[in-house]
Structures are given as structure tokens and as C-alpha cells.
Length: 624
Image (tube, rainbow, N blue to C red; front, side, top):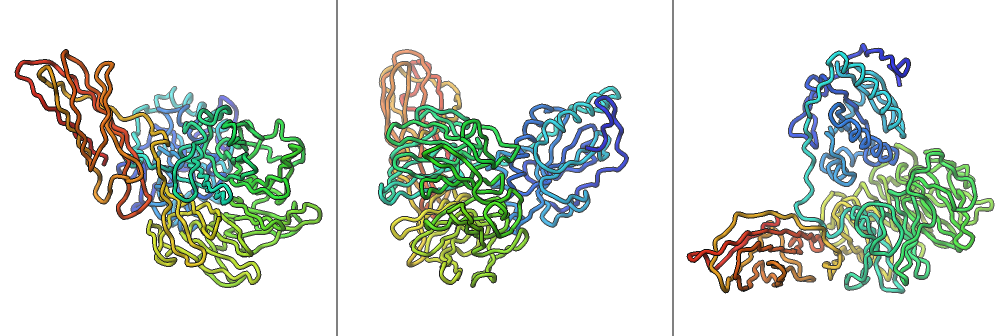
């Protein structure tokens, strides 16, 4: 970092920070920001792109810095896209919500800001002093300690001159829907054809949902739904943004990506234990063989088992690891750790952010997302090689079907195998594609290419960044991440439908939003209550689970079912009290079958006895 000669000496910058070009689209703010309005603030520009695993890692440090310097530091995310799909502001907004980013973000789709600041890599950071001068720059992860020290020095120096202004620059975080999706950014899915179960990584709810494969009935949830790192009973265990899964008997292995760990959910005992990892990222990028005890991982993203080995797509290391489940021994299996597209001997080859795995029991197939490729690695580590199935390099991407080297994909994140065919979640192209391994012929099975939510025949259907695939009984189950839904693709016809969850009440909605209303004068004796619930346009009440109303008055409780948005109840009142009316509402899009949400809302109404008071109470809830 340029600018700091010693821990207590500051050399002010001399080059003014370039102004943001006009006409750019901004997120998390009411209006575009200007460098000129940020005088008196320390500004940190974070140049990122939402596909990048290193950017995701650095984001955690950026959030720590924001908490450390809430009044002095302004962070601005400059989203300079690598892939064409990432230039779209709506898709950046989804990434902002998915990663919980609350600072201002500007869509630098044409890389104008990137060029003004002479940036060369993701992630990169530019530190700007309170006078609007460039103080220093840095590229890469692990930025907290570096910037915490330098920002502290800048504050000390400019505070002495009265140059720090602690007035807030209030962001306006992008608002998620008022209601909570039943699933939130599901990243991976695992179909258990034999056991007739579907396991869904409900990634941003930090849990695994277990449901009946064919009718969608919820069988269980694994994880409390609260982000954290804790073993124990399935209902109490904590995960952080889990992704891929693998099933061995009744052990469900989970890539606990945000915790850099592999967890073992015992489906019989309903307990969760940690196989490897301690919740912290491996910053040494160690792939040396050894026991799992004491080892750390680096963003494990997907899992596959073959020949007693649990293979791990280690996105953060650009490698594939193997864990011998019997001996508890872990070792690098494929990839040197260098981020690139290079075939060759297993540990000499180069991968780039592997995020999907599948196997035909001879080869391990890898969705190698940053090089928009599908790779194949020998399962046998003795003399094995990595080869390319389709794809070319770090900046070779597109949407071209065909044969072999003519094929172009765009950031594929999921892959599944069945009977000599690979199925690929071509994530940024919003398509599901097939690869005939005998001829390396690639064709689009389903998806129009536009980001959307639509069932129907192959080319008519629409997905929104599908990231996970699993095959069972002629059907591909798709984690349609940005649609918060699971889709089904018939591999023979290409017809797409939406897999619907039932018994959604078992998915433990969060605590309700509560509002206290003005007190009401009522007569003593019997009172009639009418509750109405309004839905947003284009939505209908879920058929698979009943919405309802709960009333609480003192130590008494009453329940009523919502029928067509209305519920009625009667109760006696003989003293002043507070009536709590809580509505739990499950509803789905009438246009997007399976796109379901839930919302819990509560109203507290103080009731006062009066001779001329009302005998009827009406309460209305709006879910929009």
C-alpha cells in the first residue's frame, strides 16, 4: 500500500481521484454519488465482479472494515463485469441481495471507472483520503489487517486538522421482497432416486430442506436457519450458505461453503458433525496430503462420491480435493492451484473456480466456471490426467452449441451425468444443456436464454442463473437460484415444470413483523373479529398449505383458517387487554407456478371497555 512510510507518518496523496462518469446505474443509494460530495470521508473503492470467488472472500473483510469505521469510511462497490451476463443491473441487484451488500454499488458495465483508475485485476481496492486524493491501492484478498491499520492512521492524521467529517452518508439498501421466499437463492440440489427424496441447499436460509421427491412434502430441515457454525441436533445445527451435497447411506455430506467446511448430517440420528474445517478460510492454500484433523478448506462448493472417496470442488483453491471416508485422509486430487485453463497430469493441470461435480465412475466431470468449461479428471490418482470436454480459456465464453472446440458456455456452475450424457447448468446463459460424451455434441435442452421464470417446452422455458443439477428417473432437478425455486426438466422432451413444495409450514418462518395499532373502545361480552389479508397482484393463496390467523388475549389463544383471504372468530372480553392478531400467509405467483413466499405479520390492538364501544373488530393485513 503506497502512502504510509511508517506507522505514524502520513504522506498525503497528490493525484485527485477521478470523478464517476455520468449516466451509470447505482444500487443501494437514492441518487448517483459524486467524489466531490465525499470530501471529509475516507473512501474505499472495491472493484469486483459477482462471479469471482476472491471478490466474495474480500467482501467479508470489507464488511468488517465498515463495522470498524462506521462514521469515517465510505465503501463504494464498483462492479466491473467479467462476463456479459454480469453487466445487467438487475442481475447485479440479485448478487447484492445474495451477498448482503449494503454499501453503494455502481454498475461499471463498460469498465469506464476501471480504466480511469487503471485497475488490472479482481478484486482491487483504491483508498482515497478525505481531500479526495488517491492514497493507495491493493489487489487481492485478506485486506482487513492492511486497511484497518492504514485507515486508522489516516483518521488520526486528518482528525488533528479537523479534516474528518462524521456526518453519515446514508445508503438505501436494495429492499428484498416484503415476504420471504420459501427457498432463498437455492444453490444446489440432490435427487435420491432410490430413497425418493430431494435434498435442497436452501443457501441463503442457511439450511438443507429434505422433501419427498415426487410430491414435494417437506420431510425435514437440517439446520436452524440461522447463519453460524455449530454441530449438534439437526434442528439446532448452524450452516453458512451451504451448497453441494453427497449421499452415502444415511450420511448426507454438505459443502458448508461459507464456513469453509464439510459437514456430515446423519439422517437417522438427526445430528450434524463436522468432517473437516473449523469455520475459517484456508489462506495457505494447502493441498498436501494428511489427516482431516486440523485442516482448513477454501470455499468448498460441490461434492461427489466415487470408490469410497468424497471429492470436493474447492472453488477458492481452484482445485479438486479427495477425502478417503474410511481413513479420514485428505489430499489434492486435481489442479495445481493456479487459476487457468491447462490440461495435463492431475496435479499439474490448472482449473479455475470449480463449482460443480459429477461422475460416471471412470472420470470426474467438473463445471469449471471461471473458464466456462467442462473438464474431466481421472478418478484414479495414479498417472491420471485432466482433459477438457468443452471450453477454452479464462476469457473465452458465449452461447454456442455444436461439437467440441466450437462450443461456448458462460460460467457453468452445475453438472450431472446419466447414461453417457452430461447435463450442464449453463448458468449465465440461463440454459440447461446436454453433452453427448461419445461425440462431444452440445445442444440446448431447455431455456430461452433470457433471465426469467417460465415453464413450458425446452426453448420456451426461462430460468434465472440455474446453478445446481441432479438427475433421477428421467428428470433433471434444477436449483434455479435467482428464481428461488426448484425446476424439473424431462430429459426426453425438454419440457420444464416447477417442483412445488408442500407442508411449507414445516419450514419455520421467522418471527413476525409486529405493529401496535391505536386502541379501540369495545363493549364487554362477546366480540366478533374479522381478519382480511390482501395479496399482491398476480398472486394466489398456496393450495399446499393453509394460511391462518392466531389470536392471543392474555393467556387465551384462538386459531382460525384463512379462507380466500378472510378469517372470522368470536371471543368474550370482560376487562381491558391487548389483543394480538398474527397472520401466517403462504402464497404463490399465479404466473410462476412454484414461486412461493411466506409472510408472518402481527398486530397488537389495545382494547378498552366502554358502554358505547363496538362489538366488531376488523383487521386487514397487506402482504405487498
